[in-house]
Image (cartoon, rainbow over all chains, first blue to last red; front, side):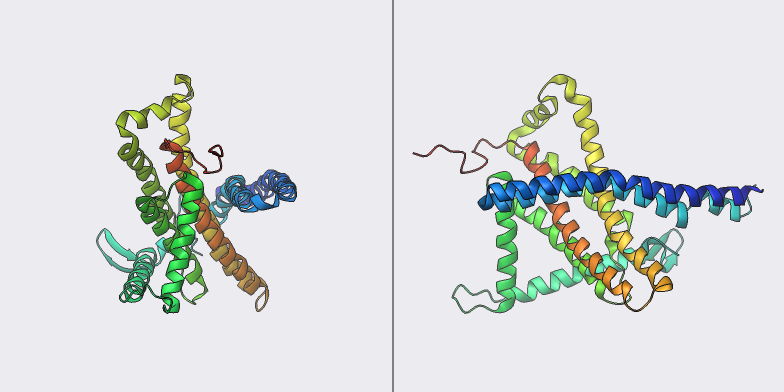
Length: 91
Length: 232
């Protein structure tokens, strides 16, 4: 098995694993955050504006980790420097 | 396939190149400046105002209310900075519905530039309000052992701002490109809708986070929330 096919196999498998494992944690965290926010709105409906705003900010922070994993898997698939080096004739 | 509009080059002369990110950034800026100038040429104070002036008033009032709720006071300088961030990012994300247009925020260059603006604006606003010593004091709060964590936190917040916006907008454009080759005609339209919603939410998140960072670095002496003052 030559160098470039090893790079291809490793990149594709890692890209799949990155995005699949990386989106488990944020999804669970966001579920808990929204559940808690809905309960708070049910308890204090006239604070719904503040609660919703804080919820969105918190969701963005939680989502960041999933976005990092997505960017890594995109780079592995479409802008992989090792693949570019290997197909440009490197050894 | 390109995952960034940086690689679509229109014109090159030696080390200088005009790529799609530059062109579309200037397009968004031109659109915002021309429409703002056209709408504010004849402002009315009566109740018979044009719908465009109404739109601008709604926008400015909404942003001012958000800034008031986050920092406790309505400040024109904060409104200028945070409002510009919001309308630039939301316009560049919403114009993705135009065919042939790639949002400049889908490039890490643009989002890094915006995050660097926030990185510079936070100490700037804090120093103009509390002085240099007041700004440096907030690094050693609550204790002097927090100094390295506060400094690292400042850097990682900036990187997170840039990568969050870049990842969200880039993923929208790339997924549509992939889906058109897999499942054309209906599903890409739904994903385009999701991309528009994400663009609006990310514009709001970016400006709200910028305001939260500015407010947390400049402790105001006034009560943060008018409901905190005891009833007289």
